[in-house]
Image (cartoon, rainbow, N blue to C red):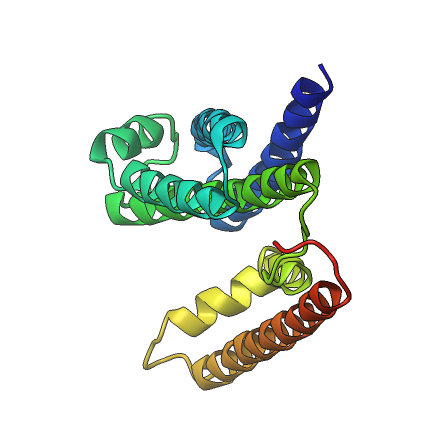
Length: 217
């Protein structure tokens, strides 16, 4: 019973984070008219991914199995957003006749792909951590969770999305493009450096724990 409650809690956390990301993207694109269908797809995928990770949790003998399961889920998410039938179904719920098909396709792809990848990342981290603790192994990973969280807050907000959109949309008449591109590049560079530093610190902590006789991951 405790495991069921734990997995339901992990599913809820991943759903909340993924749907918040999708809502931010939909609000930025002004595409809230089709958000209900996008949310349905994201929730369905999150439930499926949690079911798969729960199965892996029950049969896994090594922590690396969770990494393989996460890669499989990422590939499934990529196939999901590449389905024209799914995009057409979601676009049919949009009530804006002024949006071009190409724009709607881009919006739907980003909303679903970003949100499903976030759901996989959250579920992978929580389920793997619980499995390692159950096995009595070290649950510290090299994944830069702090930097990932900061990146999410920095990018998935109206200002961050506006900067990224301005940097990615080059125009000869946009005199501020170089400024936005430089700002976005600097931000991404800082996040990459922060991720590398965090990974280095985590690796040192992990080696220290192993050196003093702690369990090996």
